[in-house]
Amino acid sequence: MAHPSPPHVQSAQAQVAAALQQVEGKPVDLLKVSWAELEASVVKLLGGAFQVNNPNHQGLALGLAGAFAERMAEEHGAFWFPNRDSPEGATLGFPDAIIMLSPFGAVMDALAQSKLSKIEDLAADIRRSLGQARFAPGATQSLGATGPKMGPAEYQRLFDPGFLQFAVLDAAKAKSSFEAKPDALARDIREALGRTQPPLPQEARQQFEGQIVQALQRLDASKPLSDQMDRAPRISELVGHLFATIGGTGAAPEEFWGEIVLPLLFIGTPASFPPVDEEETQAFTQGAPPLALFVDVVPHTVQAPEEGLLGTFEQTDLTLEHPGFGKVGALRLIKVNAERIKPLLATFDPDKTIDAVRRFTKYMEEKAGKGAPPNPQNEEMLKAATVLLTDLKRAVSENGDLCLRRLTEAEAASEQAVALVRKALQGPRIILS
Image (cartoon, rainbow, N blue to C red; front, top):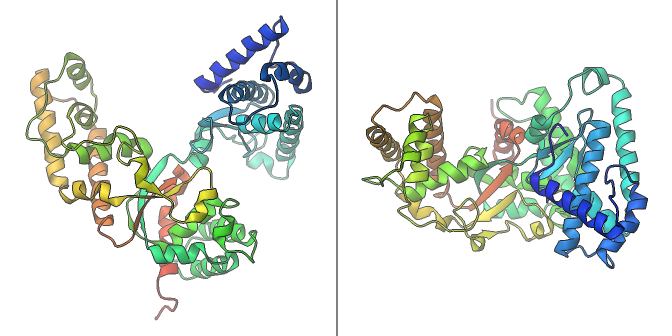
């Protein structure tokens, strides 16, 4: 594969191949043998009915998923891309049409039904869908054989929720929107699209109509949204954001929050710095960003949770914004305990933080015996981190529920348009000229 399986999938696949060889007394080609024929060998490995919660059975499913992915790669050029919503941490994408496939989920489903040949049916469906995409009118201008193709980077941008932002939701407005009927929510959003100031570009308006309004209209109009959150989790989360968010931060990659931004809170503004070793000095002289070294070398003045979300929130700090989200598997909106970080934010001062990093840079220059190499990225990171923390400090002072939102890169890029619609939804319904 041009974009190989994740290491844990490769390992599981190798283990399954070895186990099959042992049970059959000969090699079993996982990429050639039919799924129906393979099922007889798999039954021997299972030793009985497939058990979804059995770790050994899950490992078997993961190994078979790796083989399924390789077959799709060979036939259709499929590739793995990172996807935090997926149980295996990655999902399969296809270059000629926007199709996402969880090989692990497909194999688990087939094994649970004791019918591994269902994989053949799924492969046929994918073959059919890709054929239709290739030969559809206008395909050569979009995702057809001669047009631009989708790759892992494009899929990750669209589907991997690798960005985070903190949002403060008005608890009463959130409850009201989650318990409203989908048709009423769709009507309110459609009307708000016509009230945005400045007006939404036509393309953005059509996107809201197609992806949000129509999605709400496809739900059961007789039941509140809260009863259907498992059918439309992303739309439900966005409804809360649109109708109830009253403050928050910008969006940034999860790694930036977890490895740079939030550690700055726990480090504070130390008056002195610890000894550094040769490896750290060498990294500095070779151009490592001083900010990255600062959060790696300088100890926390306030102890952070050893385990937990972003190294900041304990499991007990996380709750559901509405009970209806309890039916949702991969949550992208979760309420966090603001009290965990309020004391740290109360003492946060962006100028003092910047000064601490500057002093640390001079300290490293003294230890290295030379100046820091020019690093524009360091200045950008430092500015972004202090802006996010300033936003977060302001957010926790709001009277509402502090929530963490997961977004894809594409969703993060559209936040400006979302903010316009949110303002129209929460503002006065009549615009005076």
